[in-house]
Length: 302
Image (tube, rainbow, N blue to C red; front, side):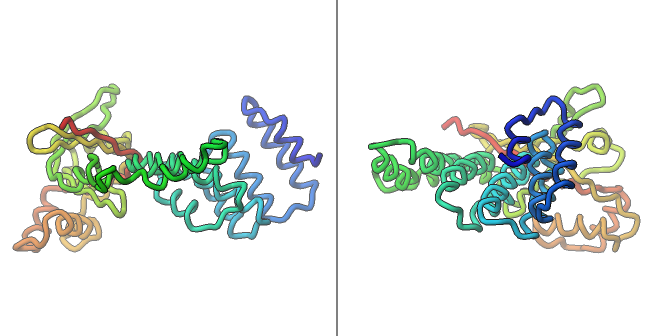
């Protein structure tokens, strides 16, 4: 057994300092390629719960050229880390833009299922989970595979996805919502806002005013949640994520004001007087909130 294999057999996340020191000693003593060393460092960061550090190391190892088996492992582990740092769409790209070896396909399908669940696509997540389980289903493998292939259809030929409630759609349609930020006391601050959800980018844009409680809360703690409901209150959707603040701008043509112009165009179209809009954004000290969405969920009561 080589030293790295033995290291992983006895890995213990209760002593991260010792593990990092041992890893560096082994990598220095052996003639591993740069890509392999990056992969092992990424795997250790991942194992120790530091996915944010693992992601760039995995990406660098893949760019450096891993052998086939470790490229399969690195892609699955990178996708897992991307999920955990709130980048589910990037995780799906990593899993789908590569032809995995047969022995890794069930693991790929399992992580695809988890990621689809993260972004709210429950029917496709179930289908992928059944595909992942297929090798272990014995003589029922053929039947379960057929059910997985057909799971998005009802017996009447209608798409389950078409019929099912999709919280993403409600977020896209909503222009009124309640933003939850976190006060210094730890209690939530609830504020009515006018959001715009960009589904392709998986971000929510909101215009707020500098100096208000919600803005101060976000400068201290960037975690936020937005809830919207339909007109009669029979369906709701919640998006959670981490916020970036842009502004306030100090001149009508500053980048901060341009960001607010882009937000208005996306949410409402062309303004009748852009000069007036820009001047008001400066005078009111408006700030653009961008929520990088990490989790969306909701329910319809009908």
